[in-house]
Amino acid sequence: MAGGSNAHIYTVTELTRDVRLVLEDAFTGIWVEGEISNLRLPVSGHAYFTLKDENSMLKCVLFKSAGSRLKFALEDGMRVSCFGRVSVYDKQGQYQLYADIIELQGKGALYAAFEQLKERLRKEGLFDEARKKPVPFLPVRLGVITSGTGAAVRDILKVARRRFTNIEITISPVKVQGDDAKHEIAQAIELMNEYNRYLANTGSKEHPIEVIIAGRGGGSMEDLWAFNEEIVARAIFASEIPVISAVGHEIDYTISDFTADHRAATPSAAAELVIPEKDELRGRIDGYTDRLGAAVSSRLDLLGTRLKNLSDSYVMRAPVNAVLQLEQQVDDLARRARVGITHHVELQKSGFAMLAGKLKALGPLSVLNRGYSITFQDGRVVRDTEGLRPGDRLLTRFARDEVSSRVEEVRGKNERHVI
Image 1: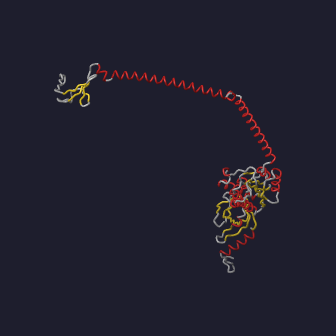
Image 2: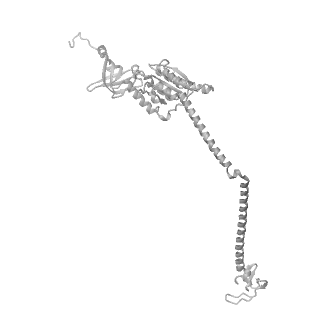
Image 3: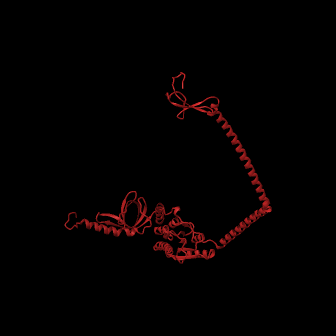
């Protein structure tokens, strides 16, 4: 009865607690599907989001311990199915779903995780072709990282025995499936690189590992998942030794395939890529030997023919005649040189005589011979009366004699000069 003396009055906490107990008893271990929205990922590692459909919304919580088991990252807009229990968050008095398992609708969770990691590592440059290392030709030592009891190691050893028994193979047995597999594979790659560094630092004469094959036989996506783990991809990327990824059958691709320096469809194909056939190499060497012998023989025949032609030549048959011919050529050149020099000298003499005649005709002595004279004052030729004064001494030169005189009078222009 409302307001009755026997009615129980709840506190907010009591009512919230009782409602929580009812909900937990009624809705434990249920699946709820919807679309993720309002996703929050605080530093605590928990995930808070809203699960909604066309008409309603439900608050959800994924604690860090459960979230660590997810193979993909949550995103807004992702359609999922959540398994868990419904309870009440006492402090706010709201009911919410506490999720323990989340599965993707449509594409599987493993596929989504694969695509997410692939895209992130691609953006970081782990798949760039420019950083991939070449596989050495005929390595002395090969490293193999796979299960010690699986078919992959047997296939690789079988190929080695068939193609080139001399090659050294170092096997690092690891788990290739399960939670521990990713750590063992990554550690094996690091240890092989560390072993090479140890050999280099100690100056050991042992052969270093020149190439690594990491892989396993085929299987489901779950079986191959260790080779899709980020820790394995980063170990391959950091390896100083070239790595060949040989995981699964031809249709299977893993993150390791994209990160490795080379990808082989199967472990057997990886071994055939690294280990050449000894018989084929012998055949190639024999072919090169035959070609080299034929080339040398052909060269010797050519040189022999040239030598025979030289020995049969006129020079070789009568070398004294060749010397005499050269001596005659020297004499002929000397004679031509003498004639040329004499002719040149005569031409120069003729030109010199012509110039001397012109010089004589135009010279002052020739003018004096025609009745002219030259008057000097203090070694200077007197050309007019300017500067002359009575009493100045003059020297007049004729063709053969000269006379000394003194100025008595200097007359103006157009007047007769009396000396």
